[in-house]
Length: 470
Ligand code: ATP
Ligand code: MG
Image 1 (cartoon, protein in one colour):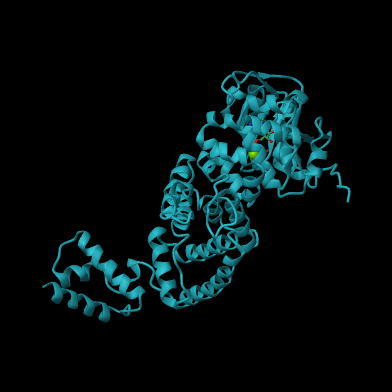
Image 2: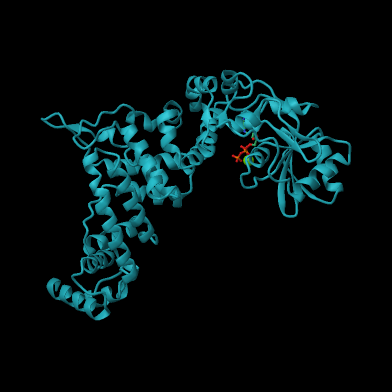
């Protein structure tokens, strides 16, 4: 079926954006909505925040907008940008500009303000991001962005090699847009991507982290691992060792990279495409420490003892380097560290799993435990076919987990019917690590169903312990 070529936006700009255009044009300047809003309005995607590009210099924009009664913040005047707030909505207004040379592959040495909007569009990264829209003048699309949008193609504006040499972050942006939109990268743009990927080494880790977070959050990182391997390995060098790494195992039909890509795809399948953000990150990084843990036995088979712990450490190292939020890092590493935690279809095993998850990510045991099941299922169906039965067994375990949820299972020290005070009183000890150790022992006994979680039963345990140690 021939693609339907979109030729008009599916919704009109919001009133606050039109107010900005009107205020600028009332002073004789030209102004357009540009970039992401235009792209998303053409594909009928939910409304995107609005960026405006204008012939006015930033001082002129600020003046015109303040005279119209709006608050203006001088947010990036060296690049010609001010931010105006209309109806509590911020709109970035930037002067038409082109960029000078990029001697460091990341910052233009200079920006030059210009009078023609087409020149401004030409400095933008991809055809789908290089369109401008105006409610009266319509769509300005000098590089065929509309057609590429309809065909699902990411194509650099101008010579791709030159564009990626100017700013290597564009390499990762190309993959991020491909993942978020479900597009493919056009052939010559793709060839240039691979060539330019090494340039990511010069880009700030936080910026790489933001793009990687977008790629992972798209739910298509499995696709990116298989189709844009060079780019992902340049962005996250720790992934390189997974590529082509033969596991020499009866349980594995794929190298670590392909196995990981399959796990990423499988978590989407098992969660109907709405996997949590940390589960997606965990799928990507769960085996990142595997190659470094490999030992080969006498039969020539590979073993990977300790790899979940090393993968967990690497996960924290990578995500901290990327400047990602600590709560995201904690949840991700809890899943990675325990992805090989042995679970049996028994109530006790579920309670132990919950206690382990509570310790790893306090306050989130139940959610993490369900996600651990999803990660394990995805892992099981991405090995050799005979491992897939385990995914079915995990279904049964998920039901048991839900039963524990209904029973209001004890998860952590805070759920115990006694606390540090009772421990100190009965054992006659002072505050210190010993109190925590005793509470942990009580918790383990409760989790294992050996002692009931009531004050009487736990006090009895404490007295017993006082007698034994006394
Ligand atoms: P989203 O915000 O959804 O990621 P967006 O298109 O708004 O998408 P931004 O990063 O906010 O992307 O940038 C706004 C616009 O600025 C882009 O649409 C593009 O035209 C241009 N742009 C941003 N970064 C670059 C870059 N590194 N090189 C060239 N043009 C860029
Ligand atoms: Mg944006």
